[in-house]
Image 1 (cartoon, rainbow, N blue to C red):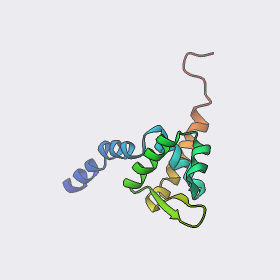
Image 2 (image 1 turned 90 degrees about the vertical axis):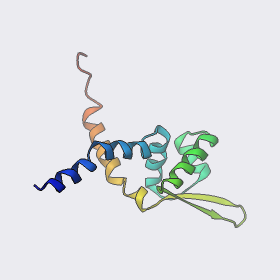
Image 3 (image 1 turned 90 degrees about the horizontal axis):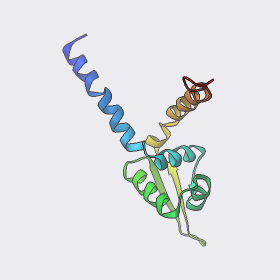
Length: 116
């Protein structure tokens, strides 16, 4: 392995994991991103399915749009409706959610160390 290869590996090491978690890692961001894996949803659908308040959901959706995970589409026909969907970047998280779900199925059902 060349020195340049080692340096490149170091650049995508723990720092990239931390940077990624900072972009998607808040509770509400993860909930919204996971919920939108099912497809495009209106604001009120997301509000009901996530349990977020209007203010929280608005803030999270704005953050996710700014970071390139979510698209916003306004349909101006009567009644006016706002739809949200995942971008290609947002859709690329599907395998991550699948792996987390698989991990949770295996490990979250086990008793904690020291429990009977």
